[in-house]
Image (tube, helix red, strand yellow):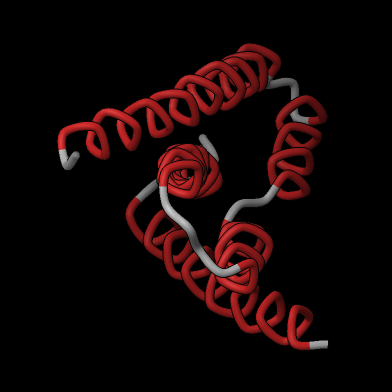
Length: 128
């Protein structure tokens, strides 16, 4: 039961962070490109890769893993918003923008996850 509590607590924190980033994006952009969702998904990819690299090297509580991976990062990143934004772009005839958004999110997201993972491995090797 404790795992559910940590997942819910982390999810609330991650959702608040996502809402804050989206609010900043809405405030400073013209709304043509879904920058807020792109930022949280790419940042989440980098962070999850980095944390996974650390978690492979050091012993962490399973509850911390649930709190961070399922909770915070699950609440922070969002595939459903990504999907809806692409649906709206395509519906509005913004095919080029939708394709660019899909490619950037997927290619950069995977690249950042790997980059974060290898950065954590590199840093932990330096610390040895």
